[in-house]
Length: 362
Image (cartoon, rainbow, N blue to C red):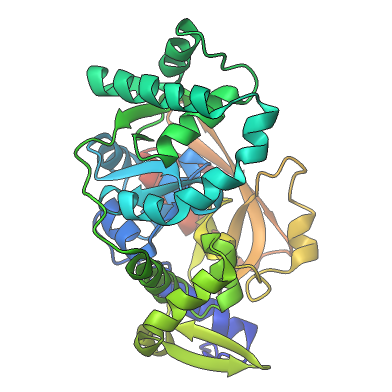
């Protein structure tokens, strides 16, 4: 029996989001294609972020995403909400121009706490930008050493905030991250920002609602980190390109394709903890029973990887890699039926193929 796609049901919302997010049926060929559609994908969990792209691609491997990063068609930087995201290199400058000024201003108190005055931040920018420009690329450890040797302490969180500031200024960004040691490159030669602020607001709103709809204005404000007035202006600029539907007095916006598309709703998905399917919304109730999810959420802020079936989170999972195999342990919220266990095995195999490993279900 096929699910109802009526927006008045949680299932209708979640199934349509699977479709708009590219999870119901993968259709993208390159990592940059996914990011051009999505706008940005949460990226502080580097391994999970690569899998988020792979889930939305027709044929993808971890190696192919790594190659895209190494070739700088996609990059990693601090953008929305001041958190690390993967973005298409072609989009990085206009995204930074849109969000960085507010993020830098919001860091003022933390800069003072870390005794990072403006002169030190500017000098750090110059040192970091010059180092990667001269070397071509340098890893995080090497860049922090360069700051230390030039009399700028990187103790505590000073190093992170110095790297973030240079990134927000559009001087450097990250590509691959071998062994949790990010490699930084210069942004010299990256496509220039040719969008006025109003155009950038409209572009970000368009990408959000087409790739994550049905969603509300409050969802967009949460995801983008924009001020409410700016987020509202962005939506207003593209509202004629979207479909508006009202449920219980709340307006939801989406692209027409999200309303009419048929989702492969029965497919089981293994999502990384920070996947946009959950993280992109302030209200996640359409896909998530909070008490069941919260019992699996550790207190350190790292979100658990989730098992999704029919648009709903039905459990969590963890992975362990040993030699040539990936071991997947699952924690379903309820006992899985036989066909659901088969679907889980297929999802595990898909993830193992992405990693280029054999799979073992624990």
